[in-house]
Structures are given as C-alpha cells and as structure tokens.
Length: 59
Image (cartoon, rainbow, N blue to C red; front, side, top):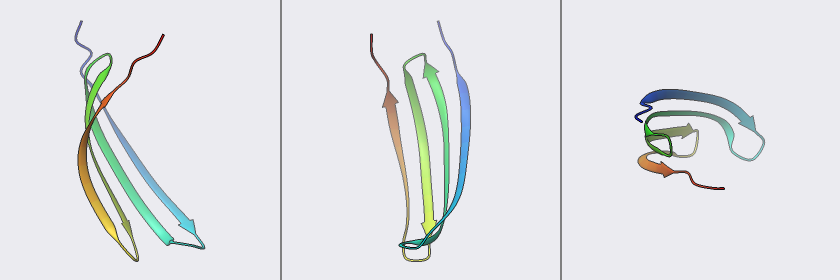
C-alpha cells in the first residue's frame, strides 16, 4: 500500500558553542517504512548538505 507523503522540517537555533545555526530537511515517504530525504545546515563556522534514505522497523 503506497503512502507517498512528504515532509519539511526547518530549524533555527543558537548555542554558545556553535553560535547561530539554521537547518532544513525535506523528504518523501515512498512506503510506510522507507523515506528519501535531503538535509542541509548552515552555521557561522561550517555548512553541509546531504541526501539519505531512512528505513524504519520494529515490533
């Protein structure tokens, strides 16, 4: 049974260690237990971007 729902998560935070940080993650749930996503984060010191897959399982 296909689920195919998407999500978007945005974050803004401040820390005495890293300063201000902004993050964004967007994903698409292909099945009930499988999602593909892309994520990015920016700080004053560094930034990154990546893609991944999330597989959930359990009892």
